[in-house]
Image 1 (cartoon, rainbow over the protein chains, first blue to last red):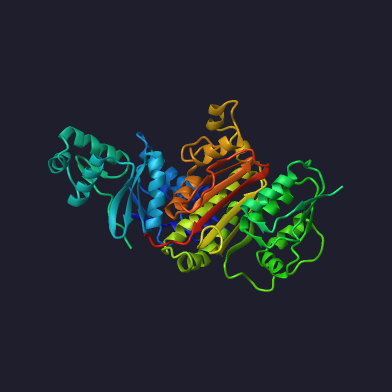
Image 2: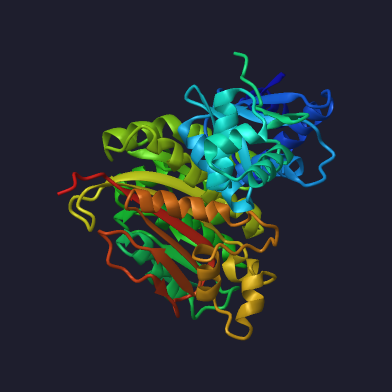
Length: 183
Length: 297
């Protein structure tokens, strides 16, 4: 588990002591900084991106930073094995992040107001399965199927899809949440 | 021979149309004198557009500043003269700003040319915008973030699409005696760049439109359909965000470019959603008006 302070990444990318993630240009340079940090981590590491010291996040910057950071992780045959959780986000950040995720058909795990949420483009059944894994701490598809009412095979496919999109971790037959943030 | 362009007493969005109408018959290299002596009131849209006017002329225009000392003092405090002095040849002297800032000015006329300028603008307006939005417009503190986001996106349009630098200004007004009947905050971002039609020349919207491609079509493609000159998915988010913020707060958003204007109208505003056949505007001018929140009846 690794913690990355987004404000520090911003300050190393842009001249001036700014706290806002605005403009496409800034989004691109901050993403590059964070991608380099993530690339140096061990396979399967869960990275907590901490937004708690970020003020404004505009949509153009979020599109360049958030969407393009998540996109390679969510591909079917992604070369990347890490996981990303957004931590310390505000309601405004959440609105902006959700808008860009929906535009690209992406989803993300965020920690908001003390709870862990799945945001972005997910179906009702995917959300039910994800919630169940979160509640149980870890689960096999059969357990999830019993509790959600989604048929076994469909449930397995949904969980595999969520794991492929880096929204759950997988350990053999079991599916696990991405973990909790350290302060 | 110098053509005299009379600036009307009220230099707002509508007032600047009168300026453009006088400019329309003139050749781009014609010498002009912009006569603002009788101007009594100017909005951010008026001031930023006047700077764009000067940038769009081949020959440096002359400028006669307002004669009224109160008006001149406001224009000085808004930093209009600071930039206008580089773009116009002044006929007559102007006051230097005596006080740092007008109490209802959220952001004085400020140039924008690069990403760092947008950061600086957002950083500068946050505290002041919070104060004005909460005390005068009675919006929640949270509205400040959306306001800063909208401002940032509007400024980025210049950096990304105009092809040259532009101007931004933000001002609060008590429009009790004017149309809205309450306090408003006005954001104006203007540039003398290529305009929406040219910017979208390589867009999908342009390809679909074929022969029927006008300034109005370009504005509608950008604002209503979210088209951008960049083909990658996710582009066009900025204007979408501004629209959403304006709509949430019953605000008015208008964009003037070339010979057209497109507006997202508010409940208090009875203008036209799309106007065409106007006198050419050099570049683009975006205006967002957020009104004071009133109790629902």
